[in-house]
Image (cartoon, rainbow, N blue to C red; front, side, top):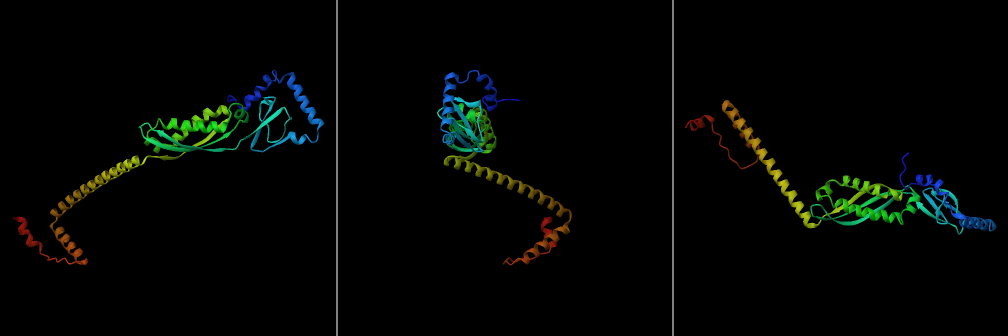
Length: 278
């Protein structure tokens, strides 16, 4: 079985070797006096010794400065001896930590402001208490630094188009760094990317020019296709003169249906053939 360094499993495996050190003869004397005090003042002292640990909590008990049994206790009732024991509650629920707005200089020398959110939880109460002063503060500060470092190596276009990939990269870095603190980073999300107004105007002008160029290309392709269709139609009309007469009559029918002031004087096609021959 693979054991992460500093986890509760490793702490429990070290118990047998640490028992040799113990708390010393003086420590056992103090513990005995504490137990004797509890027995003398029973049942009043029992209310001071019994502590309730909730289902989503764990208690790390220090006896004369050493972690008892090298593992966390709970949930349920635990006994804390007066004068010799001190305990710390650790919440194992998922914590939502907001990353404040960070001003970042991207790879292409553009200043942006980015904020995000980190979801993490403590899986080893002993490591979170014994290996770091404040696990939550340390994780939040590390998330801010990692966000600036990772986004500083990306261009603005990569940040805007690859948020999920960047967030996954930040999550991997944070998870590896906080594992020795007993913290598991579950998810990292980039909430907002703020760009200066000058850059927004420049990007809008670039997008507009790109759309105009694409529209002109589409219009030119449409004219090309229309001219090819007219060319094919003219070839068909040359091969069949009667088709030209039918097209002429169809045009007159279309003009007659519209309500306008256009006056059409139809002429026979035979009268126009003389002009064509000349």
